[in-house]
Length: 297
Image 1: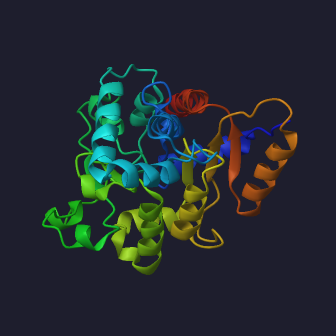
Image 2 (image 1 turned 180 degrees about the vertical axis):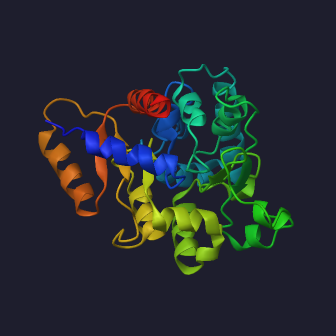
């Protein structure tokens, strides 16, 4: 059976959040029910484009194929249409992103391309004044580095992420800046190489968060090797910089996967990462309830 977070794990996580020392690292799975997952988009592309291999769920690989077959412009246009159409529905107070926006994080790192997190932060009702997030993306290519688009910290050198003005960093690019999007296999490799060779492609507050921890991993699939490699590259090869309190949220696996569960828990325990088995919704609802009780006491 999957293990559960102990009371001491919850207490430590709450204390890290209260001290401003916890950073959510978010994946597209957080938007489940609002936006299609990358694997769902890949399956549709594979069907439409006649993708010849069996791994039709592999988004970077299918994107590489579709870019060759139909051109990069088609890829960008179809993704933009898919995400903007699916994400048009308003967020409710109990959506995972809405719950996340209520909590006092100062920096958010996301591999999603959409703007749902920013919308949730701006709509947050938990504070006397609206939160004013600042948004940026990774300058993973030379073209992005040489562009005239200044980073958030170049625009305002005095800016320090805060609860009122949190920083949202799109590691895999943000939809309005098409050149920033990390879609194909080549893009993912280029991102890995760029962030490993040039750490300054990642803003200093994000570097400190990723290497100083603790982190809250939500919405990343277990099978995404691109994420695992990126997490290892950004957080340090042995994760030695992560503080106690790092938690990784994993959706429950179907019955009969006990060996997989044990493997995941042993692998994360080796780098002092606690595992929560449950949906993002379940985890964030429990976190909100615990945070509310702790704040009142």
